[in-house]
Amino acid sequence: MRIGGRLWLVVAVSMLGTLVVAGLALKQARGDLMEGRETKTRHIVEVGRSLLAHYQAEEQAGRLSRDAAQAQALSALSALRYEGTEYLWVHKKTGSIMLAHPNAKLIGTSVDAMQDKAGFYLFRRMNAEVDKAGAGFVTYDWPKPGQDKAVPKLSYVAGFAPWDWVVGTGIYIDDVDGTFATRAGLFGLGVLAVVAAVGLIATLIGRSITRPLGDVTAAIKRLTNDEHGFDIAHTGRVDEVGDLARGLVIFRDHVEAAERANTARQAEQEVQMRRQARIAELTLQFDQTTAGIIKTVASAATQMQATSQSMSAIAAQTSQQSTNVASAAGSAAVSVQTVAAATEELSATEAEIARQVETSTQIANSAVAQAQHSSAIVESLNQTTRRIGEVVGLISEIASQTNLLALNATIEAARAGDSGKGFAVVAGEVKSLANQTTRATTEISEQISAVQASAREAAEAIDSIVGIISQIGHASAEVAAAVEQQTAATHEIARSIENAANDTHEVSANIAQVSIAATTAGHTAHEVLAAAGELSSQAESLRLHVENFLSGVREAGQAA
Image (cartoon, rainbow, N blue to C red; front, side, top):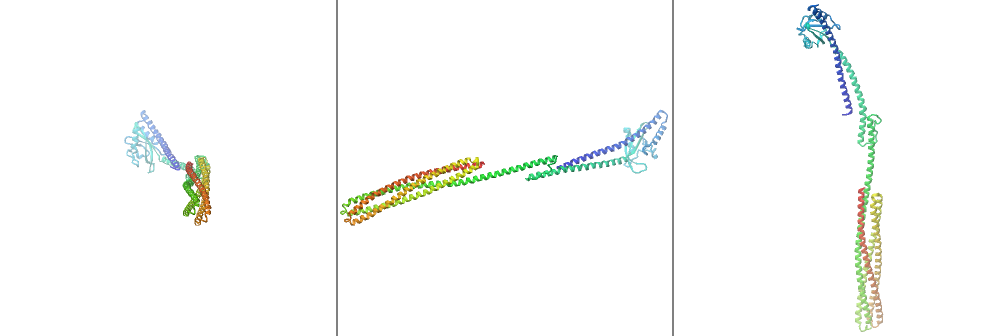
């Protein structure tokens, strides 16, 4: 139930209590009025009884006979009047014979069957009251003298046993009802005025409570709807409503403070989430970049291993071909010596000389072919070393990028504060690995430069061999021409053979240098292979460190 309803309930209960009290008061007032009438009639009847007792005492004293005493008593009672018209009557209880009454027609008659207009046997009831208690009140309706309308009348009767009489008197009580009605009206007006005043006061009090409470309730609803920054009324009151309004102001301030704190916390969470997202993005980028770099390094290491193996095979093949060229040069030297020995028998053994010249030509051609093949191999070796140099350059660039990424990771770890200390350590390890990779690629570049230098020397030696062998071919042609002119050109042939011998020695020396260069290239290829293995191991170590670094970054991002 609402407070206004409760206040009106209190008013209603108060009104009901007032009405009950008013009813009881009116009842008491009527009772007081009736009690005054009853007292008056009783006293008058007692006076009549005293009068009868006086004459009955005169009878007993013998001063009067019963008839005389009764006659004087009736005469005295009939003469009594009060309030102008009120009187006493006497009737004999047995038979209800009227003995004294203002209405002479009733004297000597029986009134036992007399009724009021409501059918009430009033004298029978009077006799019954006398029989029961010796006296009593009887109320009935009876018209006033000279009027036909019956009005309420109160009578008091008392028995006088010595003479079997009943003496009584009655007074009309219609004025009691009028007085009661007047008093009731006045009392009702008073009660109505009180009720109206109480209702007005209750209304004013209710409004002074319900309206401020309504304002406070509206403010509470606005707070529940997340409205802030509005004024709350009635905070200046000094009653409970003011206390409630001031408490609501405190609650509003707390709610606004909590809202601001919540907004700040959400903003901090958003910043943290953006930071975590940035860390995750950088981690993903770093993961993708380093994965590509490591993959490239691993591929380059594999390619270097394959190239190194190819270089080893080429060096072995070059060494074998150098051996063959040396063998061919030795054979050429033997042939030249044979030609020199046979020069003395040149005139007699022309056919043998021609055959030897043909053999020398074939050997020279074979030497030219072998030298050209060696030149191609050396050129391939040179190209391979250039490719290895490019791969090493790529590895160096990858190491630089890795170093740059490690630097960026160190910066991001520094931004992350305490939670990024572990990242800084891992980033330092990554940077150290990148520097080691750079040093390894520098060493590989130096080795490749040495291989390229050796390859250039081998190429120059092979070119020299080709020239020498070409000279051998020319010499063989001259020998063939000399065969046709063997008689005239013996000395020239001898000189040519001597030159051929010298050239053969030079070829042997050059072939030895080529063999040494091929051996050096083989050793270099083995060193490149070892460096490629070390590079592959470093790439795997770099991959593991990067994985640990990224795992730490992710864990720190989740913890943050």
